[in-house]
Length: 341
Image (cartoon, rainbow, N blue to C red; front, top):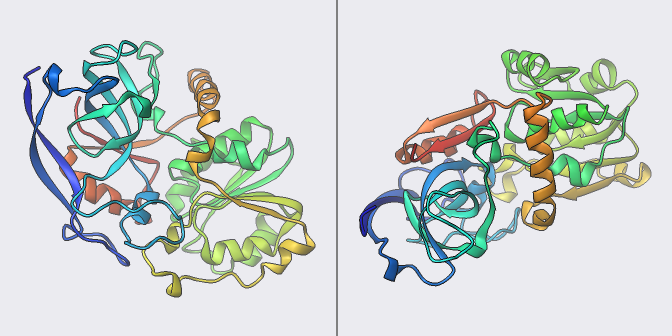
């Protein structure tokens, strides 16, 4: 590895309070980065990015306003960050060696970077037969919903990165699982590949209330993993059982709107009478659970109990298009950008 490399990186040029981000907001530039031993501080690593996780929450970090997700905004002219799989090219930390494959929870969206070893989540064992892209997953259904065997579980955006795993984890726990998706092909996918008991296309189902009560949940909903918000959340609240749990993992239907234009939920009073627990989920609060969760997921994948569907887009130059693809009803599974092979 040369002492100097040319590294492409995505940075925030302007905030985007509403609508779809464009190249006016996120821009790609090339910088020269020193990887010489003298340039790497103690307890730091020089890494090259292999895979970048493309997630909806990133949209909330370029609005320029601190609301909704209440996560820190990217700073103007600074490189944006994401969850990533990286490879060590030089190390100034005795715990890591050149060639180690790592999970980085706060990686620069760049080809190369110098990072403190303290932000590394874990090493990855590449000999276990699990693809690297499968390490870019989620655990909301486990820590907040804690579904019991026989529970009626509903998951929105069921064919997305969170939904596909959450549904399979609920099935492992012995639940009856229904999902909503944006097309008939996706309904087929979640049933045939991810093991959902049933599902429906929210674009053709004209009456969510009727669908939930008559067709899918005549006995009510015990757990609802919300990834979309809006009208779907409101409909669910009309059909929850007593002591139902609703983890709020995201509200992708509302992300590209300013808060005054988002759809309100009119029936929150139902939560009082049914004693419903609704709670937001942010991964940063559950890092202490990640190690055990990752071990469980490794075992489930190896045993064939959890299947994945990853859309891998090659080339860091496609990061913006990959981000915007999340808001299309055609998106399926986990979206990943492959930066280096």
